[in-house]
Image 1 (cartoon, rainbow over the protein chains, first blue to last red):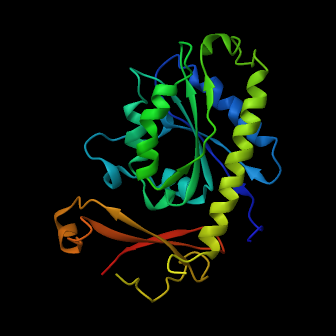
Image 2: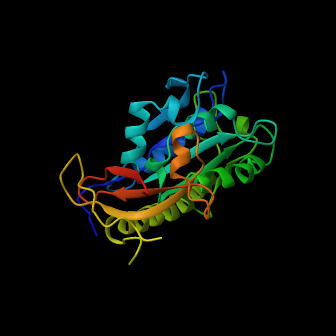
Length: 190
Length: 62
């Protein structure tokens, strides 16, 4: 297995809404990934990406975002739940790439103002993740009642999320390593 | 359907890339229509990955 390159697991903050609480969740996940050995991460805020609406898919591909997806081994996607689903602008951005995602791992972090932690958004998201060629893990992190999960400065108030994120990342890193091994070594016709 | 046998050489590092997936995609542009496999209902895109540097490449199955 190629071990020369550390794993690369960026965190995508999937909302542009002002006052978004998902940002605290995304920054928390970045912090948890940074504790792992030989795993690189960064926050990718879709608010900072060019987002033309006069075309879609490959037609709006941003070279910098595409390169980040190429170099990613897995994605942590932080999504709020808006009207029982994930934000349309998050899909608009994700749809701009395809080959960049194939046989890479994904894990979803759901965020909601109410108690359910984005579970309906996640369920809605899974068919999209699958069609993009990503392999979603069976752990999620669900930030329900998110306004009580962090203080005004974004500090975590409920330490249970550390253990939940730990389990989530254990699985995501295992899947990322396994899929990189496959991309490196296992040909489709073997 | 047999895969195309000629390997892709990584444009970034020169390593031989691994063909690890075929993806069925919907034709979007008019020129895509000539690549549609009617039995499969779309265009087959080959996905290749570089074990050396992590680059990705794709090509249409011809």
